[in-house]
Image 1 (cartoon, rainbow, N blue to C red):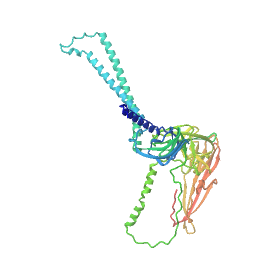
Image 2: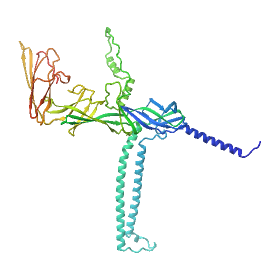
Image 3: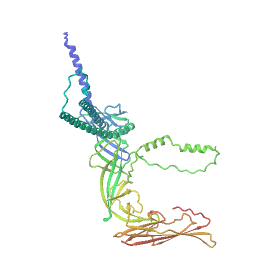
Image 4: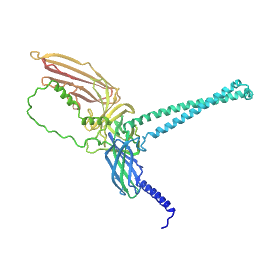
Amino acid sequence: MIHSPNIPRLHRTLGLLSAALLSIAASSAHAQDTSRIARVTVYPGSATVERVAKVPAGARSLTLACLPASLDVQSLQINADPAVRVGEFNVLTEDRDVAAGCASPLDGRIRELEDQIAGVKAEASALQLVDGYLRSVAQTGNGQEAAAPATSAPRVATPTPAQITATADVLRKSGQDSFARAHQLQRKQEALELALKPLVAERDRVASQRARVVSVTINLAAEREAELRLSYQVRGPGWQPTYRATLDATKSTVLIERQALVAQNSGEDWSNVQLTLSTGQPGRATQGRLPREWTLDVAPPPRPVAAAAPAVAMAMAAAPSPVARSRNAVEEAMPTFDVSTLDKGFATEFAVPQRITVPSSGQRVTLALGNHTAPATLITRTAPAVEEAAYLVAHMAQPPGVWPAGPAGLYRDGAFVGNGRIDFSTPSAGAPEGSASLSFGRDELVTVRAEPAQDLTGSTGFTGSRTERKTRRAYSVENRHKTGITLQVLHAAPVSRNEKIEVESRYQPQPTDTAWNRTPGTVAWQQPLAAGATAQFSAEHTIRYPKDVELQERQ
């Protein structure tokens, strides 16, 4: 056998080459996280996030890191192209500070501002050096060198007046520029620190609430390059419908502009995503409550108990169970978004056509969801006994599609009059079924007057055993518009809740409805009122009841 001194060296070279090949193979088998958020579906109080990741050919695993701690593990769904076979996956939750590359989304902006502040401070320090040099030059020019010892260098010739003037001009100009620049730097530093302060506060707030992150490692086999989609649900984000209603009194139409306010602080920014708004609520119970058994039995005779026992029993009954307490804590921690779901078996979704960016800072993003012009029935409503004023009310039928309940900014003939609420799922006061009403402010061209109430009390019956009380109210309404209006006058009439109390009412003119808005005793007169005309209304009520009865009256 021939022994060569080059053989051990060859073995070492082959070993290093094999290790390098294994390292390359291992790195290629585990795909790097290049995922991005492609689609988000926002619900009231939660959101479903869909991430898309590129899987290279030959990959055996993929880790999606820095996911929000509010991720619901049970909601994880993994889908991939046919070229990728998906196996088991592991979920790891760890501190954000420990996880590599999981800095806060605000850290980049904060570092940028901090670098700018450091640059400003450096320039300010340089200006201080310039200022010190200029001061030393000025002191030297004042003849302080004359005090030097006689053994020093030969004395410099005294500058001429022209040289002194030129030097003074240079010092003045240089000092002026230096002080002006220092002032500008101070202002710039203040502005940068003002912009930095809310970012640091928001980062600290998010870090205190979500100091942990989640990573999902998926075992897979990719025959060729393909895409993998991971969807999960996070709690906290939400959206709120809002409207802008503009009344055109001349055309009797209402323009409804539908908008949505979206906000989230999940810990990850939604950058350039396809956004869908849904009225569904995945966090709600999936099954309704069932009736409990109803039994009847003879109650046993009461047993004597100690005096303190009822208080103890009440205290024990008042203390909620740990399960109820934890459930209430979760409900209180959830943000409330007042979004109503229509009485249907499926949720309604609103797909936003353009891509949207929603930062993870709680900032509200307003989205336009279209508009609709609805014909309206206008009435002028007044309740003179409560307030001597009239208000313009518009009744609108429900537009096509789904309109969740939400606040509305109200405009009349282009002028802002106040805020209201649009809710087609709840019947509005006095509105026909399937419609909603909006009040567009006070009508100053309608004058309302209520005469003082007349109240008389006497006795009736053969022996004066009954009390009789008569009350009379009268109202007048004047239309000072140049056109006619539809007037509605509301009045509250007494309603007896006991057979011993008799109520007799007389009206002039006869009211249109004596149970307006399905409320017994609420009387409504509704009639057209021509321009410049005045209408009179009166109501007289007679109440009779026994003298030995104490009348309970609520208004």
